[in-house]
Image 1 (cartoon, rainbow, N blue to C red):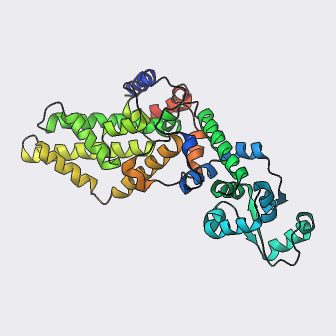
Image 2: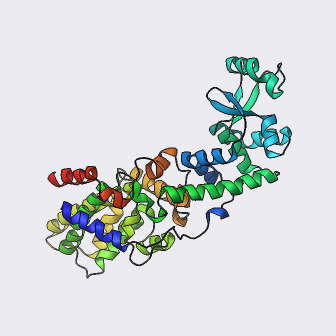
Image 3: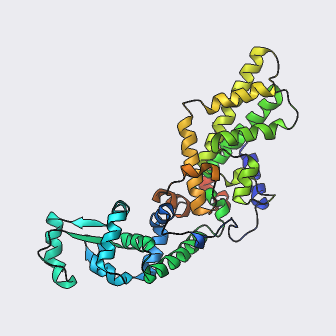
Length: 364
């Protein structure tokens, strides 16, 4: 089984689209950071992009409590605005800025700050509190600020840097960024195994022609992410030779495998109980019942959120039917797909540690 899985993966490697970068609808540069909190947070959660952005701009701040901080006056000078404009944006976006590092110094922190820095940065020593930005929250402000030409220039450059970082970190193939997850190959192996059980069950227990395989595969896709295979391929702009499941995230593959295994078992039990093969309508009813099972609903919701959010962030692909599930991508996902543990599929297939995982799976 291990050899089949490896040959299967190798065959699919040869069939992938030969593209240097993903060719998805839309463009990173078309994202309006002033209006989209999700696009803003996706940048601010990306530690690899933030590192390059920080190096590029090199804003001079004040070292305080292990980071560079900036007073309102310093930020006003950096962005070419007055402090009243900053205060207005803090009123309107305070929660978002706070999430990304803006804070108001009081008590002990304020005393320490005043003791060492007030004379250097022209802040009144009688102030009962002082608001300070870190680099991340300065960038956050620049993303929403519409009255500043400097902020506009920062946004434009930031988008260029983010696009460049993701392309370089993913090897130029964001279409298959899902495969960089260290758990992808085991998930793909499991799904491949359960797929065979599922298709065998359709063959043995469902009274339909050859169209049943595509029909009920689409039922699984629609149950999990509300799209059939054709819709999914259109949104990700897959070429004819790209296998649909090669682009799916580990969590989605795991859920598909669960569906396939569960449905296969139900088909067998129901068919044997009736003493005949099931009709299309009877099989459809099993799918409906599986989708509405309360035990699996949380996993469906989670898979939808991950797929919709990650595809918008990494692939610039919008799943219209899942728009309500889109959230900002957490920092852990950038580590998963762009960090030290991420590798391309070809690298993993040449890795002895990966091969040992397949040996353990085979021996179960």
